[in-house]
Image (cartoon, rainbow, N blue to C red; front, top):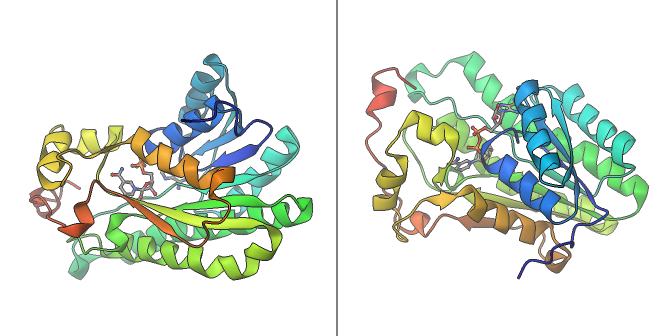
Length: 266
Ligand SMILES: NC(=O)c1ccc[n+]([C@@H]2O[C@H](COP(=O)([O-])OP(=O)(O)OC[C@H]3O[C@@H](n4cnc5c(N)ncnc54)[C@H](O)[C@@H]3O)[C@@H](O)[C@H]2O)c1
């Protein structure tokens, strides 16, 4: 059973959290007592999401900005510390997909995916770890990988390589951050029902339900609960791991038709 106040007095930064998985992690951390700085590319979305959390009794600050820019992620840590006095948790959640076939993949799109998915995660972790080292209080860093970092999905070459790289980054950083009491892990969600996925395909839940051993895609709450466990004091000895939350999908990995990419609608 969740401890209602197990994050009381802790401060968390979460990127790409104006909607979807990041917003649900922000909601659940705030509901369990954390002070949350919530970022989104869309400043109005970040503000609205933060307002919703505050209205339900949480402590939350919404900050706009593109995590593909190193100065932005560094600024998020500075703002969290200015506002809440410290930093204990960093969740590098923001990630973009940009579907296309490998033969036509555009160099600018490739760079954008790298900057957001990898640069945004790497430099958030770096800024957070520097702050946590200075505080001497330990901390938790969490990356958002994907089942696409394990299993090939057509038209996701750039996205997939970033998601696989994040798993290795979590594993790699244990060596340098472990001595400071900072753990680094990742979550690899499978198909998850989010506003973006439903906008792309109104039948998303049914389509992925048929392809998933549990007969259901994940909810954002399923992913957030796994995230909160890895961020909690109970996970102190879990370090460098990636937790797959996919209803068993990676065991078989079927993919639906992707004609929306072929028709240029992605
Ligand atoms: N939804 C899924 O099915 C799924 C599956 C596996 C992995 N993931 C990963 O989980 C994470 C969250 O996924 P989601 O589907 O909830 O996200 P999403 O696509 O719904 O986006 C969430 C928010 O991120 C913001 N965002 C986009 N680019 C940004 C940037 N450069 N800087 C700051 N914010 C930015 C968007 O404005 C949006 O409000 C991503 O890293 C994604 O790759 C998602």
